[in-house]
Image (cartoon, rainbow, N blue to C red):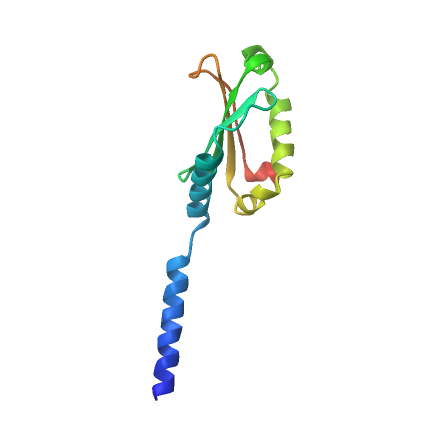
Length: 135
């Protein structure tokens, strides 16, 4: 009798411990975006691009990447009529990013927002990649 009570107690304790440690994919995405932003952003400028932050939008299940474009890349003319080519480039890059695979497996969306350094209110390019595109 004593042994069965101990086993039951251990089993209940283990199940409660596992339940309290569970983190949903949405929780994980939100946490990892926040941690990455706090530790790494803004990133150093590379190819006229600065990653300002990552943020997870629970309502749309979208992992948003916010960038600032500098120098010659900070020009609206470069984006006119080039949406399809830029979309394909982002899609190819996303498919090759192994660190995003866990989120792709969960059918998350991935947003990319590029702002002007000269005019912070100006969005030069905005695109969202959806599961049907990257799978």
